[in-house]
Length: 316
Image (tube, rainbow, N blue to C red):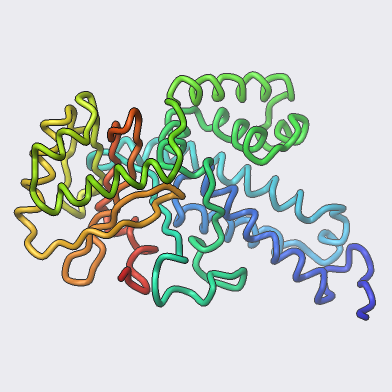
């Protein structure tokens, strides 16, 4: 039986492991705050850089390293959200959060996707707080609203702790979270079980593969919206495509221009979605929102920089 190390001595192996072990939690937090795996990894790297920049004495003086790391990561993300708004205003076309794969569906992926995996995508827990619909609503919030809401409503941090991260009073943070919560409720439709959505997505895939516009129209809500993200690096509609008939026509037209396109049913941000591959490369990851048995929203990510987690290991 091993002897516990002394409290606060982070030079010992168990304590160092505990500090490094916070990475999964920090990646989960940062991804939900930023909507980008690349930016989340940068934020976590910056957080650890600040930890290791401190002297041993300064580290030992910190009562809860986990709380310290979370506070710093939250503040880093808050700063990044402010600058991200400016960058996204200059973004070519629509900006969609970076889609997350479920590694258990991909052959040849990281071994088990365990804690030692170097890929941040393997560290994010796939639940309702990372669905594309949820992340898109988060994008509509102010940075302070988003941080207060995610910390309190998703990660269950008490408002006094949230206040220390956001730099507002607990009462102000409570109001920020309340405002954010109203946005989420206004955007949410009736919950659709994953199995129900999977059936609709499967029929959608079959109709798309067959080039059957009539079938696609029947599977799309008449007021459906499709948003595509090419980032200026891949062909994509610069504005949302609105209406079931227009979306069906657009999809069949695009498939016709890309012979040999392969469609695969895959989990996207914890929900049934589709992955399009061409010549062995993932070219599109599509997330869906389903209501009343029909597709109401499609988010199609084509920017290759956002598809890096989908290119390793392949999907067969």
